Length: 251
Image (cartoon, rainbow, N blue to C red; front, side, top):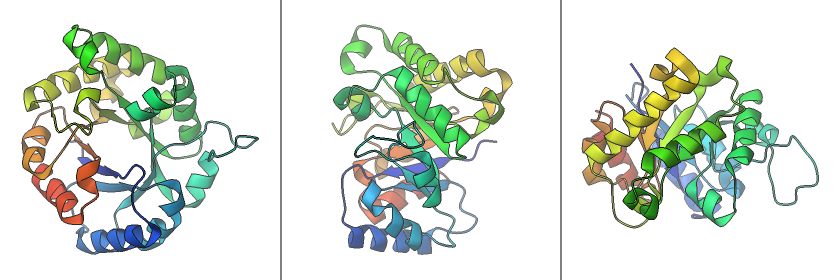
């Protein structure tokens, strides 16, 4: 049985003090036997403070991005080794905002996935279609293309550590949410694609839903057979809201 994974993507929010307080409070309220794995992904400058606040807790630390090269003249970028040293267990790659705002390609994302695997950090790989792509009936085509391209350099020996996040771009920060049935259809398709690409290990890979997840829709979404958790944006900035998603969606 796949363990649900609920991750908070804070994007470019919070100060050091805010982040440390949130992480400390969250850690104190997550039970050792919590059914869902809980993950916090703060901005780079806050990773150290959050890592310290999560010491000895079961809450995992994640970064929001990484550069595929181990070192070099890449001003403003961060390497896998730097993230590992801070205790990151996961790193988000391929987020729609990185694809759209920073022109990241599937090939570049594939390099990040491979670099994270080599460095012992599990990738949380995001894929998803825009509203125009969905309305033109291209959802599956887009998802298949992104998945195939972004996993082109995947080491199959550690593929089970991969987390996939389906994030319909039209539902991110818009207040719109895919219905549970729509989300399940996309997740089931992605699992079939994973099986095509990776074989039997696909049944063990967790697929999160990300797209305006809130306390009042988490339970219905995570009750679907192929939805194994949530990648939460805005609703993860408030502690009580995030805890409600964890408890509502993973029980």
